Image 1 (cartoon, rainbow, N blue to C red):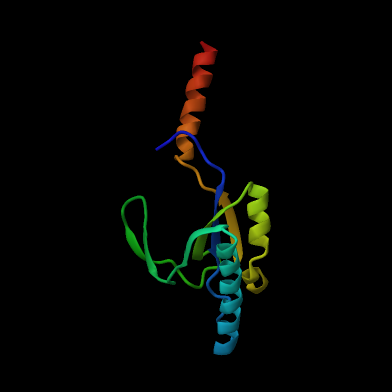
Image 2 (cartoon, rainbow, N blue to C red):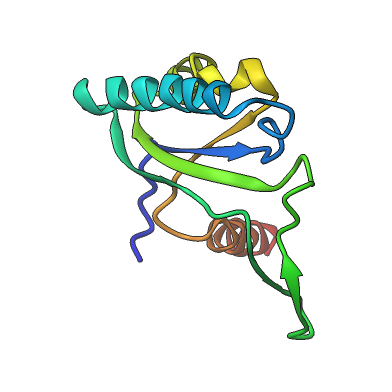
Amino acid sequence: MSSEASESEYLLLFRGTEWHHSLAPEEIRERVARFVEWADGLHKDGTFKVGRPLFHRGKIIQGNQTVIDGPFAESKEAIAGLIIIEAASLEDAVEIAKACPGLQYGLTVEVRPVSCEPGELELAREKERASKAAK
């Protein structure tokens, strides 16, 4: 992994998998179509890099390697999908995310810069620099 982080890619992490429970099938299709139209617009202008919706089922592995069913679709924090976009800055990525039509229906969007390496490695370098400076 490179130590050079690039903040031109941003992850849009969509949370919330219960927005559709009280809707009729045609309402669900209409709202999904709005989301797809928004994502298609991002693709056409070159902003969209990759993304997919997620099934509302899977497994969760905990630190002691316990495997449990999940994620739980009824959780407001359940991850519904993700998109990686290209943007000039975090602020620009946030503006793009604010246009997501799912926000009107209870979806939340987390926006995070994509790094080329784990943040813990930068922390380790900072600690090493501080240790050397203290000597």
